[in-house]
Amino acid sequence: MAYIETINKGKKNYYYLTQTIRYNDKFKKIRWFLAKGNISKNKLVELSKNVEKNLLDKVNNIKKIKKIVELDDLTIQKLKKIKINYKKIISSLSNIEYQVIEKEHLIRFTFNTNAIEGSTITLKETSHILEDGISPDSKSLREIHEIENTKKAYEFIKKYKGKINIKFIKKIHYILTNNILEENAGNFRRIQVFMGGAKHTPTKASEIQKEMNSFTKWIKNQEKIHPIILLTYVHHYFIAIHPFIDGNGRTGRLLLNYMLLKSGFPPICIKKEERIKYTDYLELSRDGDITKFLNYIIKKVEESYNELVDNTKYN
Image (cartoon, rainbow, N blue to C red; front, top):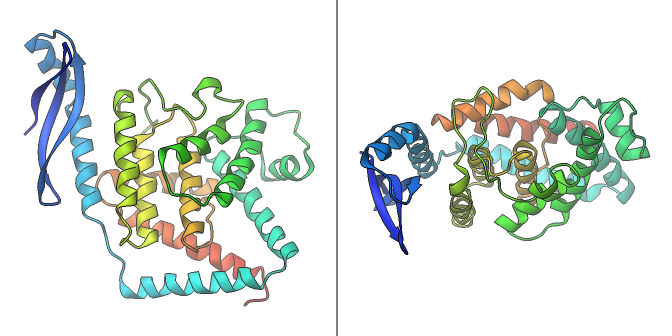
């Protein structure tokens, strides 16, 4: 049962809508900020009604994270085989062969991850921009920057050897949105945003830093979870928070591929034609059913691996 909690900080009162839940055999308070200062009881009740659903979403997200799904033995063995054979294939390629494979993936990934967000630049135009440095006259400078920046961000995650933390996530976003979002590039948003058509409301701006701290801390404590399960939860959780004013989807998909590569799996490419399926599965995840999104990610990993096999002599 949610209640209004008052916390005194210095000379000011801060008011929260709070709910206590049992989490990891302990009681944990989940809060949603209401207001600060001298606020009447009636006003606080009114504010509470407005954010009650937001608090419920936050509570449900925390409960969902606790109930991690598991993979069956057959799927675990299938993923293990993909990981082993992927390494063998990559190791067998010459530097030139590897560069060709990487180039083709980068072009397709760059095209699709931007097309999902509404970019009108075609696959052929993407290739011209990245390969030849030729920009189409009919497209906006913003869209051209998005293509160029995606390549730079992808190259950054491939070289990065550290752990997932806020600095790393902000760096991805900064590279992606440089020359596009001005001072918002690489910085958490300061206003509320909404995801068109989605039932879920992203985290309130004042709560983002705290949520992202919890998010990255949670990732560090999940070493026993299968990496495919973990990256599925991470992508879902990151998109739910929506920490930036724009570019969250593209940042999230780069983060997902970083985790795949770090875990020894092939990177994936979510195609623009799959946008509705992809967003629907994310929405289901926020409603408590992450299974379909997990199966979708596994299918994309298989698809990426099979494409590599088809394009090499390994088959």
